[in-house]
Amino acid sequence: MDWIKILVFAMAFMVAASPWAMAGSKIKHDAEYYILEAQHGKQWAKDDKAVDAKLAEFNKNNGGKAPNILYILVDDIGYGDMGIPELNALRGYETPHVNKLADQGMRLSRMYTEPSCTPTRVAMMTGRQPYRNGMGDTAVDIAGFGIAGKEVTLAEVLSDAGYNTVHIGKWHMGDIEESWPHNQGFDYAAFPVHQQGQLTIFHDDAANEEIAYAMGENNYDSKFTKDRWFRPDASHMVTALEAKKGGKPKEVHMKAGERWNEKKYEEMNYRYQDQAMEHLKKLAAKDEPFFLQYWPLYPLTGPRVPYEQYTTSNGGTYVEKLKLLDQWVGDIMNEMGKLGIADNTILVLMGDNGHFTKYSPGSGFTPMIFRGGKGDTTEGGVRVDAFVKWPGMIEADSIVSDIFHVTDLFTTLSRLAGAEDNIPTDRLVDGVDQSALLLMGETKGRRDHVMIYTGNTLAAVVKEHLKLEVPPPGENPIGAKFYDLQRDTREEWSVSTEVGAWGGAEFVRVIQRHMMRKQKFPDEGPARGVPYDGISNLRPESKAAVKAFLTKQKASMM
Image (cartoon, rainbow, N blue to C red; front, side):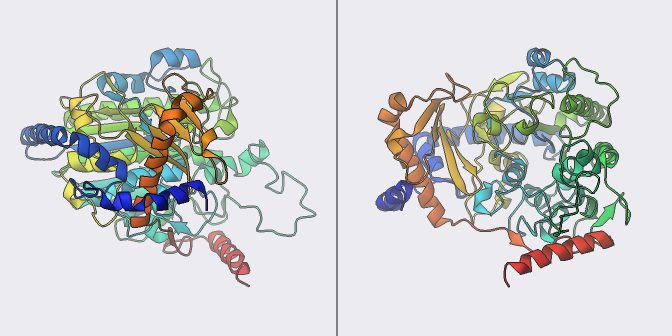
């Protein structure tokens, strides 16, 4: 038994006896929330009344309607790569439209996500960190699992409150039917089943450019290859689906026998931008408030085939796509102005995790302010740019340094929409209500910690500006590494003695309380099923790919 388990059992009676263990909010949170509530509950109650008054006044002036919500999640972008012209200049490119958004809204300077795509998206959608529901893995190929139907998503919470809901772009929360957005609360969805692994990294063009290699018949000598199912074929996997709530999805823009390539990936990205603009106009014309979720796949791209020349001094492939994405964000903001909805719409723009350092520096990006990137539990993997704009409600050109976790968006947006009563109370919700922070400014946050997981393993704990790197089982915790994130943003100089002498035991107790809450609300696995089941026009090659997948699964049971 490792040291964490020993301490958890030793402290069990203390957690059970705590007088504040389930006080306050009917939403069930992790233990640290109640410790803060015990100290700040009276002030929180006053702040809640102030928030209620602000929201009531807004709704009155908005014809009795709650605000619209437009959420844009950018894939694999490092902290500081957009929103700051000085850092743009350092990199050798410009993001003027995102910079304008940053000036018009609030920058969340301590926005934490999960280390990679799927976990962050699950966390935002459910308000729950993904180790709780088995969605901590990022699947690239056909996998046969996804987010369970019993999870309650933000789209479902808002839909039950009268919102029209649309999802456009990357989803990446499973390849089984119950996990897809039109079955998770969205009225309409246009999305790829998988992610850029299939879509831009190991298709034919990428293999030919050695972005991925030893994959295709043109890329290696296959005379000794006996297992023809070992190498996934991007063209045989389902690409993009479109569907309405409760209906059967249809694969679009891909015919039987057709090969997937970078040109089709480019067309997909432009199509999603066009669809986001199209649905923005449709939703704005309706009487009900809307939740439009737009998750672009760019800037992540692999092959350089689309470029005859680069247009920035940076010269990076990702940078060209980020420049394009910046223009798209500007187009959306301009359209909101034309439609007359800019003032009654909450606009959130953020990254999902750090840059994909596998392709540094060739992509045009490297970790800049923080160390590490996508897949890492260092700050470079889980700290992202995040901006929130709501004219007249959120102070323009403001910065807050309170800790914010992506799960908090679930709870906070529900509250701002007047839909908090739809948040489930039969499970633990990691997201806390940060409405006061957004509407009243810095120091009004309700979070002082983040539990950082890799898969199902607790890797680090942040408390205030201090970070513990959790030692592995069997390692003496006395030697655990601590970092002061304000003095050492890159986590290169451990202050184990200076912090550990007084803080080591306190961090252990934070972990104890967290583990005890996990015992009360046990982690579960994902939903499992037959990949692609329910698609109305599944191609023959996709059916064959599923058959191969099921045969490989069966082999382990022989």
